Image (cartoon, rainbow, N blue to C red; front, side, top):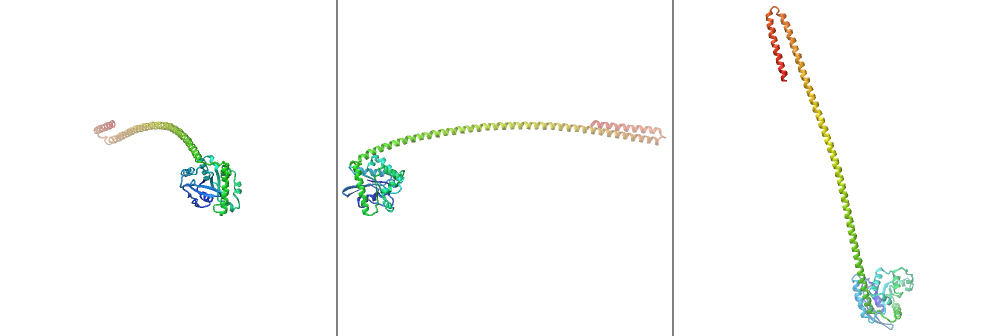
Length: 361
């Protein structure tokens, strides 16, 4: 049984083992084999049945479909398989190839390792470097993935130059057949059977179910953890928001108190200013009233002084006229007394008018 990832040369290697081109091969690196194919050939006294399988990790075929196709071969190869050839290329053993090997171990069980042989393709690279596969393998690093594969298969390996000379290819086939003979002896003629596959498939399914249960439980635990974490985070944020709101409320209340205090202070200042202005206005009003009273007193005094001066002046003039009149009319005494009496009446009348005017004022 030939297994391996897509593009490693399984079909070409199968043709080399059969000694004729039976399986369709392509060098493009894309999978040509879509179904499990069988071919028989009589080689060096051995009746061979070679099974070519689709490659794993083909982008056009899911791995599960490929494994179902491979599984059908176990019932078609009764009583079972003597050898399972893991085909890989000389060079870097990729992570994809390692995953391919792990995939087969998972589905076929670790007992399949007792029937495995590693077949390297691309031997022409070593021929170009004038090295053999026996010289190539010891130089591999112990921690390399390729050495990991060889450790699993107990260093059962060979190499093929599928494009080399026919004689060289036949020698490679003989070497492989001898390794298979030795492997059959080691396994005491037993096969990797369909019952083994079914048993391992059952174990694999149970393991997968258990892993699913564990994964589901783990996922559920993670979900609960995330939920709890999210809830805790939400509660913390809610508490933080409430605390922030409370702090803002307190700050707002303090600010309002400060504003009210400032407003009250300003109102008090305004009231003080109003009172001061009222006091100043009252003082100004009193001052104006006092000034008006003083002016009125001065006006009255001035009028009185003027009146007194005018009266004195009038009296003086009257006296002067009287004196002049007396001097001019000394020869008429009776006439003088009459004139003086008339003048006196006029003066008294003027005094009465001035007194009435002052009263009205």
